[in-house]
Image 1 (cartoon, rainbow, N blue to C red):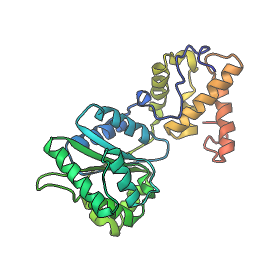
Image 2 (image 1 turned 45 degrees about the vertical axis):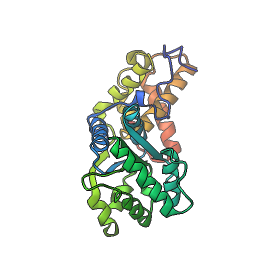
Image 3 (image 1 turned 90 degrees about the horizontal axis):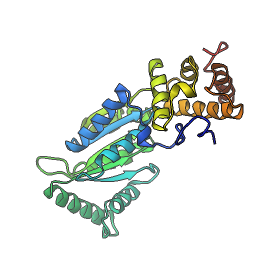
Length: 280
């Protein structure tokens, strides 16, 4: 709606996790590097945690894009409400194993044979379970047992668990100590810092074909940070609302007072009062 007005080729602040819009802070670069390294070097268990809206799913999409065209097969389970048999069936279908059998034992046997054949061909295999904080301890323990599919020298299946910070707390419990000992790589993605807000917004606008200085006026960054706490999803939400409001008034670039007004309006709806009385 406002694309032509701001000389944009596409919407820069969509909520979908498009990897081309991924803004790599030092923390995001480290997270992606660890994910790729853990998968390619067959490290076994990898854990990635992050607060809601800080780019975890986008990082996973970036990982999948890097693995595309390599010798790596990926099963990506994004529905964490499935039981173990559901996860196992989903894996078999994602891996293209058509005759897994009707029992858990036969499906595990089919999966093991598939993994062995791939390892013989020097091919890697990965299971990604997103929103893993929703998995109960018994189910996480069953997932751990999948890591027993191994040769004398290496893991046949790499398992990536991703989720909100509650996942870290759950993995720290005594009943999951065996799983905890299997984790080879663990990384927590932090929100953006105040100095990273402008580069983040500018990056997305640049990818969308625009110029930051022609879209937002100087000084809006402090409002963006105060509203969002550095959470990329909230930054995008406020930016999109501000662009739409400014377009409706035919204002370019988007001025500070308009961003403040939209932030306070949205903050009142959330009822969180992040901005405080002075909007700082």
